Length: 188
Image 1 (cartoon, one colour):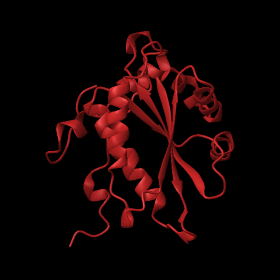
Image 2 (tube, helix red, strand yellow):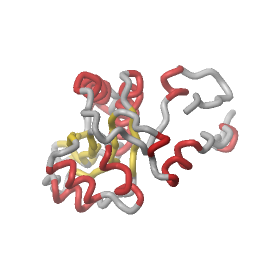
Image 3 (cartoon, helix red, strand yellow):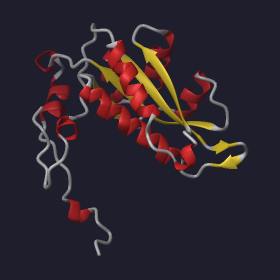
């Protein structure tokens, strides 16, 4: 995949990062790279340093990995099982009985930091919103205060040429984003 075509210069690690759906089903997770990505997530900014994020790290071949795959919706189940690890990023809605209205945002920051560090360390990632949150919560005993925000597939890049045609088409489609002007509500 070629780097993103940007309107202004950005860091190479950001321009080169992309979300694959084709993972090498045999290569185990690079544990050092995973540890670095988790460390980057740990150091993401959070309001009042509340760090509302919690992670479930499930390596391929474990019961936990299978539970996450089972909770994925539709097309995600067709490809995500090949990932060396599946990570649930969850947000705690309160701290000491006080609501944390920014918890999902902060958890998203942790996921973003994870993806950038993972890419810099040679791992590929893909975040998913298509999963059954209640099923994830039940499987991992989240309780009422913890909610899954995203599930991320992580691992080595697979062979695009050996992938099913539907996956190849998605992988080879041009990378696009709407112009920044369409995202600006005010630019005073």
